[in-house]
Length: 142
Image 1: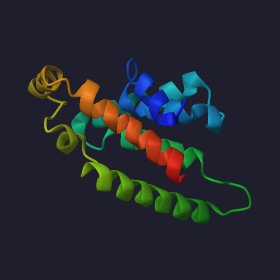
Image 2 (image 1 turned 45 degrees about the vertical axis):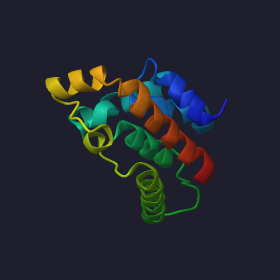
Image 3 (image 1 turned 60 degrees about the vertical axis):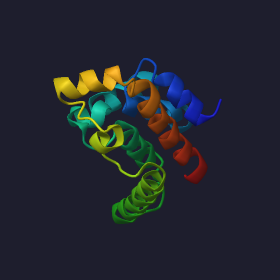
Image 4 (image 1 turned 90 degrees about the vertical axis):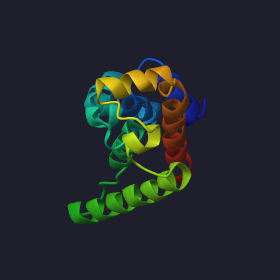
């Protein structure tokens, strides 16, 4: 199964960040429980409708993919920042933003915004697409 399909399937029961991280966990040698716990607080744009959870989940994957062998911490940081920037460029090119509020058109951190998102079925349409897209970008580009 493609990572994007796995991430979308995960999103049926997990948050956006968990879904993306878990879709890559096996390749990263990261057990399910640890992956779920790490990404738990990042769903819903860190519960503030800020940076999309699919994006922060992708950042976690990129950090886990960092090659620590024979490199200084500065080199690792520089390479990871470059990977995050590249991911951001690709995600923004496809979706127009990294911000949950902008991507959904509502602020899900408020009761009214959460109700509106549910009424418009945004979690099952927009969010699942974002989760799949983030996982796909990681799979294809990194």
